[in-house]
Amino acid sequence: MTSDKTSNSSNNISDDQRQGFVSSSVAEDHGEGDAHESAPSEAEALLPWYVAGRLRRRDRARVEEALRSDPELARHVELVREELDETIRLNETLGAPSARAMDRLMEAIDAGNGRRKPSIVRVIIGFVGNSIAGLSPRTLAMAASLAAFAIAVEGAGLVGVLTKPAPGISDARHHGAFATIRFTRQANAAEITDFLQNYQATVVDGPRQGGIYRVRVAMTTLAKEELHRIVSRMQHERIVEFVAESESDD
Amino acid sequence: MAMQAPADEVLIGRIARGDRLAMQVLFARHHVRMYRFVLRLLRDEMAAEDVVSDVFLEVWRQASRFEGRSAVSTWLIAIARFKALSVLRRRREDELDEETAESIEEPSDDPHIAVEKLDKGEKLRRCLAALSPEHREIIDLVYYHEKSVEEVAKIVGIPQNTVKTRMFYARKKLGELCRSAGIDRGWP
Image (cartoon, rainbow over all chains, first blue to last red):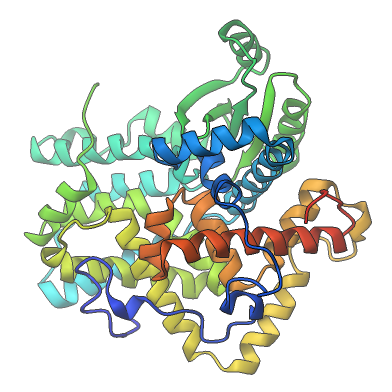
């Protein structure tokens, strides 16, 4: 384990954590912008949070008021949305840590806290962790239910029931291809239903903030090219505003 | 089955009492996004995995001291960021520069693909990957990790107004990189 001075960091966020990159290459950031440049308006500065759905009501109202009177600012909303979408795509391709991360953690806990007893729950949690590898923070909430279920199962003494993986769990782990999607504001329920039927897709989570859904596009694992082909087709659908492949670790 | 997932704060309380299952649930819930955040900073999968383990070990040891002044996910990312920066500090400066230079040219699977042949989205992702660590970090925190101004300020340890301006200049830099890559977005 790496050993660094974080013992005081656990009680919320400490001063130790309030430090920047030691090898900063961002000269323009030290003053948060060139002194000769004009600072952004408050509304413009808040646009990323407005699009991400992370503004308080009062700030959101201020931005919306500015958007009504400033067409150029309204155009910037689309730029921000584009940046947000591509940032999600970029992160979705990063995969997930291997089981080694969990093993390393549990070994360290055991080393400091006695012998760890084997637990079926750990197996389930490991499955959940791997299964959600392709999910963005916008789509990870569902995993919590499964994890809670695992705790409840062990608490109820039902471990023996689950010593063999349930078929559904096995399928979810090894068979499935997913995409992250946001429909246009104009899309109605009937159109979305048609869309899902046409692609034989199922919404498995959402909507999260920003109107993002996670859909299963196949019950089996697909070749990367095949998933890419499906997502590319979806991308051209009138009711689809944003769609990205969700990487699987199968 | 309608079962309410325990809140992160509840899990932290259970972890503080030595509940390993709660630890595993918290891990399952947060380890992927944490890994991606750290990987974007370190660009090293093994090192990112180590940081993830270390963060949760820290949580195991310090859970009883969590006071709930910030969301658990914000606390976790702040610890992860601190540990990732520690790793960066340990790297030799020239090694870091070399890796950074390589990674900027790396995003495409096929290095022979000419930039002009990439679609707009791919070009934009290349430009996102080429941002400085500070700009990359704030873009990820806001757009991917959905952190508010207040939460970013807590994680990075800067005033809220600085968060807003840093994000603005990160976007502006992104726009400049895009223009260099042949995408004219009309701003800046």
